[in-house]
Image 1 (tube, rainbow, N blue to C red):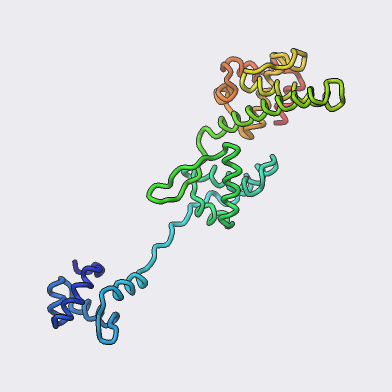
Image 2: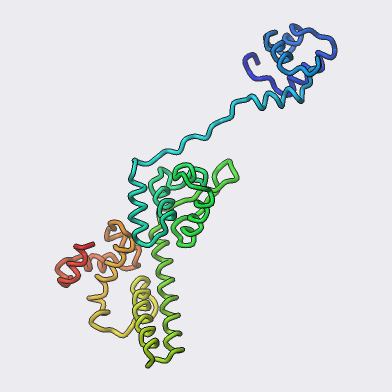
Length: 279
C-alpha cells in the first residue's frame, strides 16, 4: 500500500520488470506506488547499471532504524541503594544486596538480567553471580520472559516464608553436625563440650521454628513461657521488617493466640520488653 515500506517481494518484481524493459511509471502503477518511490529505490540500489533485489533488501535492512530498548523504570532516587546498604550490613554480599533491593522495589517484583545490568550499571557477570547466590538462599526464582528466550528474576510474595524455611533446615543440619562432632571428640573434651552446647542451641532453634525435632532438656531459658517470646523476637530480626501477628503465626506454624500471647507486654519479662523495644 502507498506509504508502506517496499518488501523483498516488491523488490523482486521491480528487478524482473526492469529486466523486461518496463519504465518506472508502469512499475509504480503495477505496485500501486508513486513513481518517485520506484525511481529512488533504483537509484539507491543500482550496481553497474543493474538493480538486484537481494542487495537492495540488504541495504534497506541496514538503513532501517533499530528499536531502542524501553527504559527501565527507576524506583524513587536513592532508596534502593540505601536499602541495599542496610541489607549488606546483615551479612549479604554487597552486589547481592543491590540486586535483591532492585527486584524488591520494582513494580512487577521482577527484572531481566539486561534490565538489572542497565539499572545498576554493572557487568552481566556480576548480575549472574549475584543471582546465583540469591537463588541458593531461596530469595528469588526464575521465570521465562514472555516472547523471548530470556529469563526474569522474581521476588515472590512468599519470599520471607521460603527464606525462613531455608534457614530452619540449615539450623537443623548444623545441630546434627555439631552432635556428630561432640561424639567424635568425646563429650568430656573441651571441643566436645562446646559442640554439645552448639547442638543444643541450634536443635532448640530449629524445633522452635518448625515445632518439630527434639529440643534440649527444659530449663528456665528454654521453657515455652520464656522461649516463645525469644522465638518471636528472632523472627522479627530475621525478617528485618514489621510483621503482623498473622504473618508471624504463618511463618512459625503457631496458632495466632500463641503469637498474640508473646506480644502481650504483660507476659514479657523486663529483659524481653527491653529487647523488643531495641528492635
